[in-house]
Image (cartoon, rainbow, N blue to C red; front, side, top):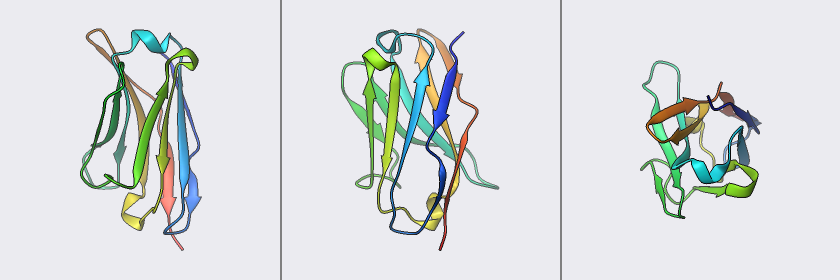
Length: 115
């Protein structure tokens, strides 16, 4: 069982920045994928970004060029740097990791973009 602890959500004005962090209870080297999803009210959960174990990454179309994902395997942590935030980025952001064939989710952290 993998435990995930998220931090960094909050309220930010449009155009602002936030950084989310997610620490896993197991070695980052054992996690093939670390990433983030989000879910806005009334919408389905969608991919924000994945960071794969050996350095590649993948982004959802709506965040490309604005968000950057990174992972620190020795610290078992994945980060999401969010810049140029828009009101439509408002959602609960969930940390996600994959270990072998198993998927694990964090409890979610609220990000609200509003003036």
